[in-house]
Length: 475
Image (cartoon, rainbow, N blue to C red; front, side, top):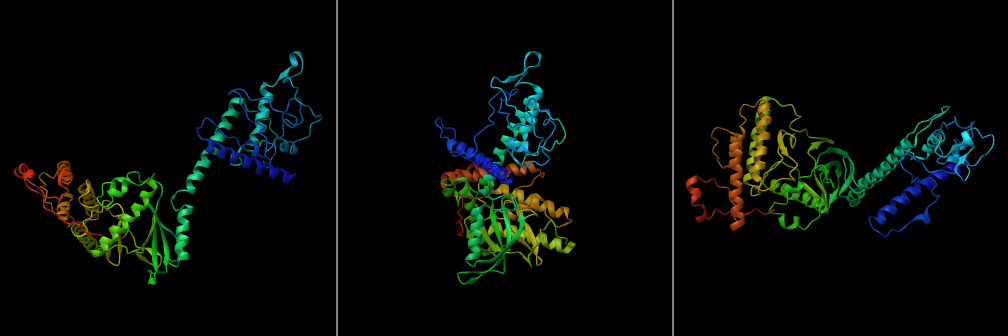
């Protein structure tokens, strides 16, 4: 009997999956294909009635059927069965088997009982709750005469059905996307291939998560007879865009990728995002900026050198406790890094803060440069101004008296020397936006880019003079 009960449960789960596949296959088509012939159990509980009416069922094995007084107060203690006949096994046997009449009512005169009787329907609804999905906890009612109205039962039934559909959607989405501290099967396959190829010796686990990626620690192997660092990190870019919806703002206007961006779908943009970080890190390494070394790029997985020691990552600048002299030294290092990044690498970090700077071996290291853009980006100077605000605010809160203000730091990094005036941030920012607009007009008219600050007199003669040219650095 136990084997029959387990088989019944398996058949019902198979039918539920078949029903979902049928709905997914047909979609919104007017002509649909039925998988009814492949079902294991014939449907016996499809209620097409209104909210306040439940269809009449065959009650030959119903422990709550009318006239069975001995079985109406028993509910199974353990819900292992998924059929009303199985429910009958745990209840007291009826004194005499009775069947529901075809006409739908029993008795005569004042003692007539119809299929719409509230007590009968309530008891039947309570018994039928055992047919809900296994994840729905309905509890036990041993020794209690429980009754559920049709309205409540139908509401519960609809809720359970919607939850099953939602659970199926979430499961399918999880199988095809990279979520927090987890990877989809395609990404796992890429990671296994790296281990099998000898590029990685082992993958140890997740060490960091963010809005755009998940970072794993691994032990290096060898690549094309070249040694890989003993400790590396795998930066797996998330394949879902839910957590970083404005991702395309940093890449669609980047002149290095603008031709390729328009031809890609959202999933392939993630690969372009990983490639963008690889190119940015290569520029930074060529300028001797402290940053991770690129080891390998496979689709949306970027393998880099590990900044830390013995599986312990270097602390972020916001978490490390430094002396006054070390904090002062850190500020000047950050200032030099920003100037070098802007002048030699022709890049703006675009997300620079104490969260994206590490302190290791007495130096400041820059990480997370996938969103970095060139200064000629339509919003490049706005991103630089935001970076300067974050850096200046952090070091001033840490008590570094030598830390420059937002406007002084911006001019020191960019070399534009925008007049500060009354130090009104709104006016300063408006000047930045106007400067970007003028340079964007130059790009559209002549294909030339410059960031020279002009006065009002020079502005009148601007159309007669060509802006200076600067060659773009190759990756």
